[in-house]
Length: 76
Image 1: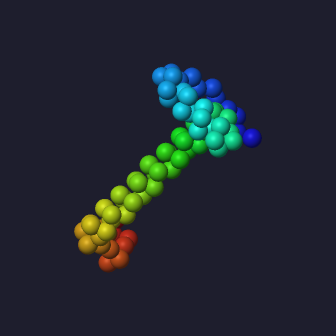
Image 2: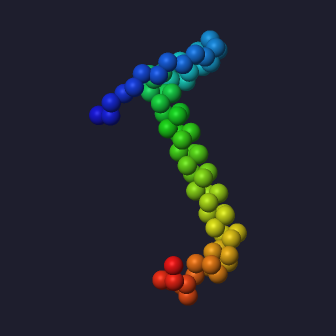
Image 3: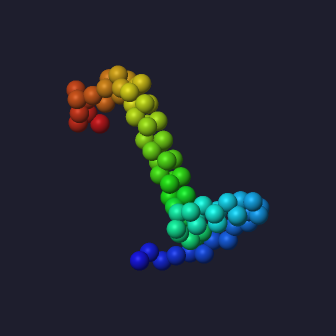
């Protein structure tokens, strides 16, 4: 089991109630619900980064191939 760290946050009552209701609907604690939201958000950010990096590589593929292509292997 991964050790847990306590994190205290302040939110307005409407946000707190929404979190309680969503957690209840999903059959989980508010702590677990918030943890899942953060993990999901972090995963999306990671996914977005990978997509952006892939797009960048596609855009500049010819530049990288010219600079670092097979004919330049071992020359650095």
